[in-house]
Image 1 (cartoon, rainbow, N blue to C red):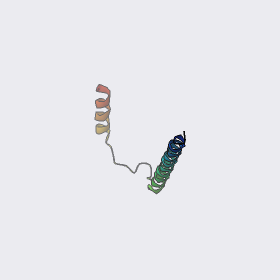
Image 2 (spheres, helix red, strand yellow; image 1 turned 90 degrees about the vertical axis):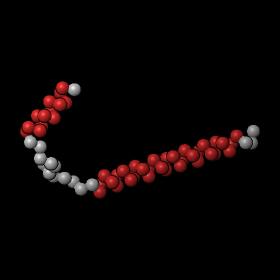
Image 3 (tube, rainbow, N blue to C red; image 1 turned 60 degrees about the vertical axis):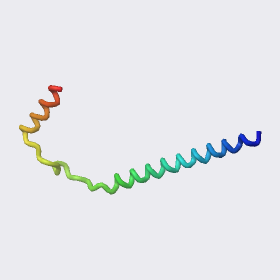
Image 4 (tube, rainbow, N blue to C red; image 1 turned 30 degrees about the vertical axis):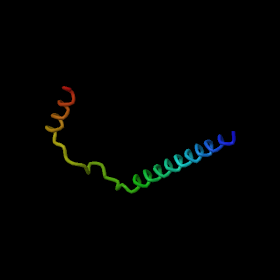
Length: 62
């Protein structure tokens, strides 16, 4: 019966390592999100009315 506690300890260590990895990932996501430059509205590529209508027709015909 003495061997059973080792597996519980390993499971606990594995779970703690998983949680640490998730925290690291979350902090990296937050850091990347903060580093993104904010764009002003309308600063994206220009879309003409004709190409917008063509896109809309393509989407509705599918």
